[in-house]
Image (cartoon, rainbow, N blue to C red; front, side, top):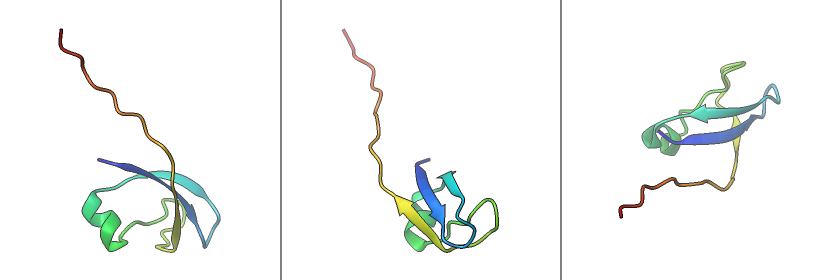
Length: 54
């Protein structure tokens, strides 16, 4: 499952939250500290690890 960086607009806590794509698209993500759904997502880069076949 994807991980997203969020800042809660209610309590100010920054969190890395694992959610399904369905939850993310519907805005069903909650702050783990206070339970608020008023979150601001931070966009960041990612790294994909793949296997190389010889």
